[in-house]
Image (cartoon, rainbow, N blue to C red):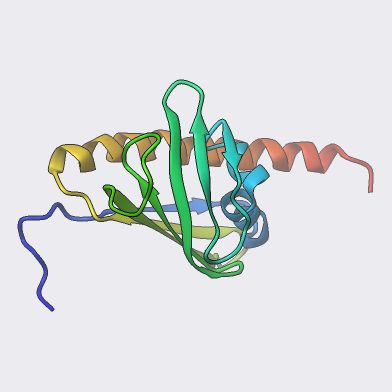
Length: 153
C-alpha cells in the first residue's frame, strides 16, 4: 500500500510527564479522568475497546468517539468526528493514537499521533488544539499530584 502524498501528514507530539503511566492512563482512558482536562464532559463512553460515546464541549458541541483499540496502560486508539453532532459512520473523522512508555528514572513518555486529515487546514486546526490540550494535561497531572501528596496516608 502506498501513502497518498496529497493527504496531510499526521500530527505527532511527544510529551515527557512526571506522572506514572498508571496516572496518565487514567487521564486518557477513564471518562472522568479524560473530562478533567480535555472535554467538559464525556457521555456514554466506557473505558473498553469497541465503546462509543460523545466528547462534549459546552462552547463547541458534542463529538462522536469510538475506542478502536486498547492495551491497558500502554496504548489507546480512538476515532472521533470532525464535526459536532455527526455520527462516525459515513462522517469525516480522524484517528488519535496514544502510546505510553515508562520513562527511565520515573514518569511517562506520552506519544500522540492523529491521522486521517483531509486538508492541511483541518490538520493545522488540530495542531494548535493539541498544543493547548496537552498543556492542559500537563497541568492536570501536576495539580492532581500536588493534591494527592497532601492527603493523609
